[in-house]
Amino acid sequence: MAPDEFQYFASLLEKHAGIVLEAGKEYLVEARLAPVARDTGFASVSALLQSLRQNAPGRAHWQAIEALTTNETSFFRDEHPFNALRDVILPELLARRATSRSLNIWCAAASTGQEPYSLAMLLRDSFPQLLGWNLSFIATDLSEAALGRAREGRFNPTEIGRGLPPVFRQRYFHQDGEGLRVREEVRRMVAFRPMNLVGPWPNMPELDLVLLRNVLIYFNVETKRNILQKIHRHLRPDGCLLLGAAESTLHIEESYEVVHLERTAYYRARRPAPNAASLGLNWAV
Image 1 (tube, rainbow, N blue to C red):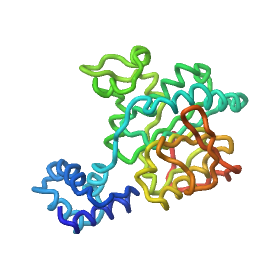
Image 2 (image 1 turned 135 degrees about the vertical axis):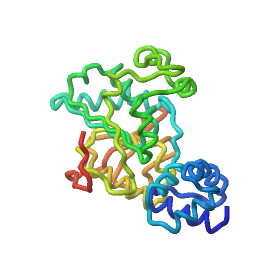
Image 3 (image 1 turned 180 degrees about the vertical axis):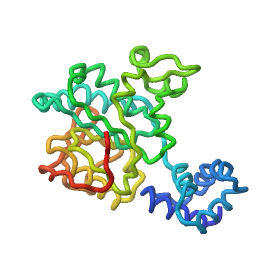
């Protein structure tokens, strides 16, 4: 891949998805774009990139961008945040919402569904009282292809073997060909929506819990700050934000305070968040 081709695509990716490609990642771009080139009828990645440069942004551009988004995920990834949700964060949140009996959750990087379904199973298993609550659980992702898989809730044996406890496999999945499928009652708990974190944001309710895990590491500091500020506008004053183990708001956005728990941490707003402002599209639930 020629240097100017890499530079063009790196700029395209950062502009439209916020993802920063470091120098030396030419091999990654070449490998990810090769299937896109084949599927769109181009003889090579270079031919694909030449076409992208010569034409206004369209479907082919988004196919190329989606190919570089990272869909690495697994059930109950990292384990400790889910233990904290079960043992501390959610019990405290539910106690504070006992009067309103309402809970709004946003999983901001749904990928192919393992993280939101992990949380949905945890909610169903550990907090059965929520069945009588007004629960809004939205899961979003940039990749339409990933969201399509997430909505289907079908997983192959390798995906099932990565982090899914046997007891949850028995309770919340059924056989589906060679793999397993999430049972309908769990699938109904989660509404999957397309959303680009660096694009216009839809109208959202005030949020009680936000999972933005293993996403910020791909963005530059300015983009991280912008996303964290937008989340702060929608997070209830006593709401909770969970980031990935290698991520932090420290030295990026000071409107959060960190709450340390055993082997994990979460963040909450330092000051009452203002009423959520309209930021673009309608978010129908």
